[in-house]
Image (cartoon, rainbow, N blue to C red; front, side):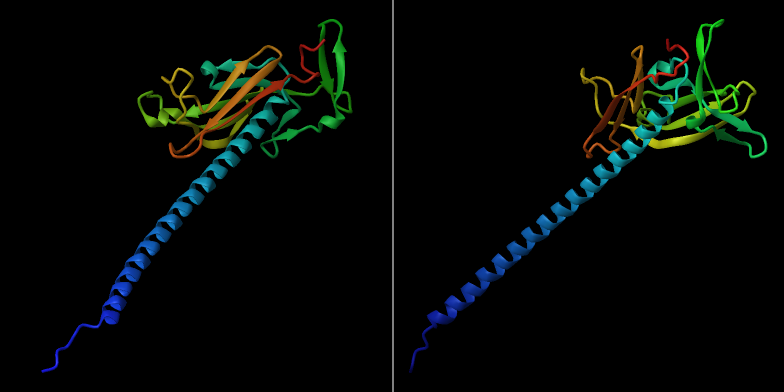
Length: 229
């Protein structure tokens, strides 16, 4: 009787197929893992870019308000808010909105009796002064809650006649960053009076996994302030 011997070539082929299959599965798994990693990285990068854009928008709006300051700013609420008088805003009773007088038409005058500067328009009428308040409103008053460290940035303007209106400059401003001591969270917005300038600091990190982002600027008084000499 003829004996049947196993074919070595056939066995090798099956082994190669098995190894190739395992390698293929490993390569696919690694590829999927890398793809997921890049996808997650891309999502984090997009989130960081969006946060930076929000921070710059809010910061530019705050700076725009401060650069219109007339009197020395007043820091309120332990640095969470700032109040300053601004030039050139007058309330329109017909439109129930604020009209902005073109700064190009302003002319600075000096009152000898009062010893201070004031501005008039092209017709010689004194430029009105309104009070503006920029405030970081925390979402909670309870320091133990997460909402306490985040808030919306609002701006309100009013005059001596009682006219007033307000609007939002930014929402959800806050951070998970800690201060230098590592014991307290940094505020989303802070104002610091440095005499001839206001230091404005904005910190933003809405998610602990995002890269923290901070902006700091020194906004100087303009040369037409009421105290200018």
